[in-house]
Length: 502
Image (tube, rainbow, N blue to C red; front, side, top):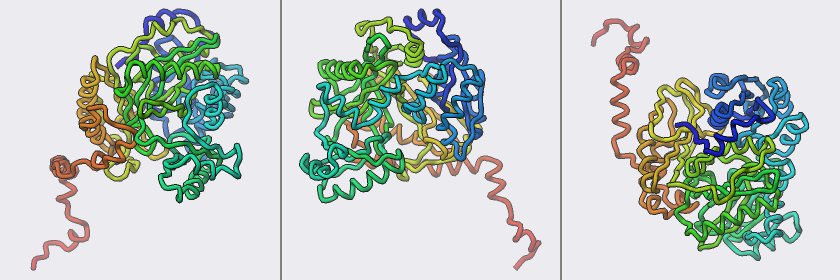
């Protein structure tokens, strides 16, 4: 399905931008996503790639592709010097970091700007402020916005543990520089607090090179609500409503939707206006997301992501506004030419993430060659893979996103459920069946879920092993010539015996 560009976008893209080529410092489905908008805006796309991605859709679609190399594929996409050199080689006037990798790296943003290019994201100063969870939390609290009770280690390391104990259980221990759930520990028994701190510090150093920690009150069974914001260089900030992101596994999102089934109109207005206030106080420019923990009618600031979110299509489908186009306009120095009242959320949108993993076996990553790939019709598909491509463990296991939009939540869920069931991907195990089970679950259908929903309902991940699926697949395999020939073949050792009879 084509991405939506609003009427405003259609008018604005007729105006000349100060650059004609954008380098994409990313890969996979987000690179494909960005290229599609660049084409609609009449801009040329260039992309960096590691050799492992040479045969992927993004490389085939881009107008120019420059190879970067390193000891590992991930290291190649984190090499600032190589990426800047590639941007110069492509004569790029701007750079889009996508999400992940270097998207929230202030050093990278500065290097892009110093190289004479526009960085399609917020300013380096804002990335530094909001990217550090401790600084961001203190900033938000100083500006009068709600934060959960907490203790910060660097304020007074000697009293950190005692202050954490004083908050009381349950607690959530977090690395200051963390993200994606890495290093986080829930402490329900204060006798285990020191062990949780040691583990979180160790993981913080391993994943982020930063062992600083903080502890905050853990809200039991909370909802995870985030608000999409847009800002320009002229002080204008608007929100594009909220996204519900509470269906998670291991602190990572699986299903997102908008609007949230948990918010009343009054709460929706409060949380969205709070997000705008935080972004305005930070002088935020470009697209960003303010995340909140919500429970018992109250919400607290969680963090701000200074980039495009994986789940941004939910907002695009609900509002009809192309967020990548808005990012490009903001980076080009354009003023937002629509007010808050002009932004309307229509109907209901749901996104499910297709992962190469086995929920039935503890969400272990899976690999294999994509032998057959057929996506469902009638929904939006954001994908970065092709039939024949090898799925490896070199990167995050997300393969694609399936996004449905309909007048009501139930219609959107039904549409998403049908799409997941119609998906065909052979050769690599995925979580498609798991997604279908969530979408059909009574609690999900009733909107009665929270961030611990899957942990409290492990049967959804395990599924029904007595449904005959294994027998059906085995029967289907035996109908293929290659499998049948292999089954009927006589091993060489036995064939060497000749026509011996007892």
